[in-house]
Image (tube, rainbow, N blue to C red; front, side, top):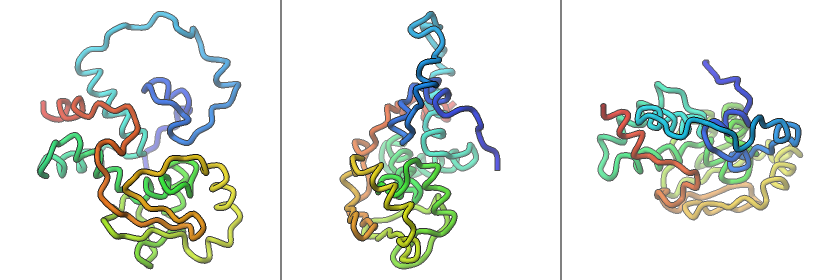
Length: 203
């Protein structure tokens, strides 16, 4: 599978994202070696560059490749509602993102690996597909055997201050969450201008 091996902090800066918002803690070394802070940059992007950058941002945040991302867009374009908002709220329902939102993974990348390794169940059945879309009333839980691992307790200590979105009801002691509603645009806390993505694909 294709993957981007560019350093996370560097990629975040290029896309205007805070590494902390994605669960990454930037090392002081990386922070102190930022070249030309506040220096001269191109003050204005072309329309196409701005649209492309916004698409790349969403793909990077959720760890999605182009082929799958286009499928999400085409599905959103056919659905009722505002295409950009439907796109984002659909992606937000991915199982790997839910695991991240639950605080059982420090990053979405780690969540994706854990789902792939079958550490989680949906309604009592193991699901190892990161792109699986959860629905209202679904119960996502850490497998009983996986609860024996100290790693998940360590992760919870790190993510204890993470804000859980309103569409999820999380039980930290049981290491599970229930989907109480579908996510809405206001539940997505990343600085994303989804209308630019729609404009890009509409050309």
